Image 1: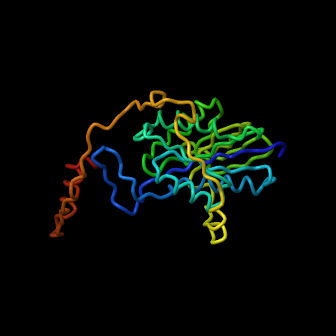
Image 2 (image 1 turned 120 degrees about the vertical axis):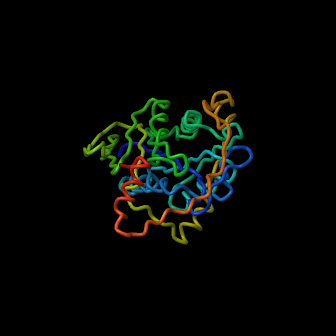
Image 3 (image 1 turned 60 degrees about the vertical axis):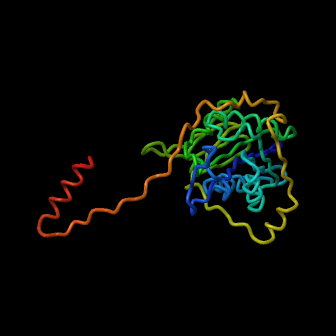
Length: 265
């Protein structure tokens, strides 16, 4: 592969799915107990495989996250898995950012941190975030960067400057290609993410993590102002006990009546 390549993998600090999620008084999701999003491990693995399958000395893999102070834990986990360095965009103006604000801030961050000495760059993302699950950020990000968007990738192969992605669209399997630079969203069917070993965990301590704010990117809070906001939030109601139907010969009819009342038939 001629020249050098900078792969920027987006990672996100999300609430632990094993714990109950809650909205605080500020109408924001409580993120005190966060982890690296599981869906972000697949693009990271894809980045590391590209590096291993090419001249590793010419490929740099960076992890980039946007979030509050604790979000740096997602970057540190990515470094343990194998990323070379990390970047953390942390600014109070980005709290509760919607999809539009998120893609605008991340596009500016990518343009700021991508290696000027690299001839090409590649942005890898998950298929969606584990918390918001919109799946819309990759396409918006590509539009803001002015590069091709290859979404829902089940396989990613790089040959020179040509990127080939296998994907499923409806019931059709597709193979699409684009020249770098590009943005690719990687699904959980693409690979089997690796686990960091003790040596990798220790090595990660020496890898650099750079913290950025909007001023570093030349942006103001107005430039990344969210288009939507949460007005109110309430805890979900307690689950009600289900109805038990005892079969006295009419159970089938009662079941059909119940499903009909619920609009399920």
